[in-house]
Length: 190
Picture (cartoon, rainbow, N blue to C red):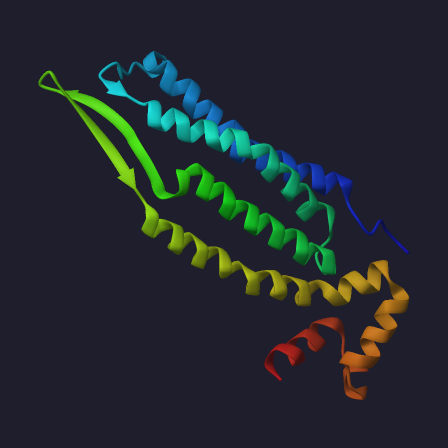
């Protein structure tokens, strides 16, 4: 074998990016909203407890998402286990979203003062849960497409014996005469 089949470096990189997205960015937003005077803003008329609750939920679930994305980066493109890792991360992403929006009921999300009267805005986003489920399910063909596009190179590099059996079962005699780019073109366009 020429290289390592799994990449700890990319696993850590994916986990770090996920931690930044799910923990770091919400933390920075919460820190800014707690002290908006940094930008010269005055938010003393606003009650942002619902926003802080939502950001806190994102940060609490962020460690789970970082762990799931570690495995997405750990397995290389073309590996069957990467599809499982991507599917687990997709399901985790949906659960994170459900937890983030408190299963569709954000309650008293934000409050503010208008002419001495306190106004509270509650948000109910149950319709968004279905839309997010549909958008998450649309990722599955992308996972399989990525797998099939990179399967040949993965087997050739990390499993030469598996690559030989892959060639026997997937290619005709005229495919052996073509280069890799021509084989992909023939498979895609018939």
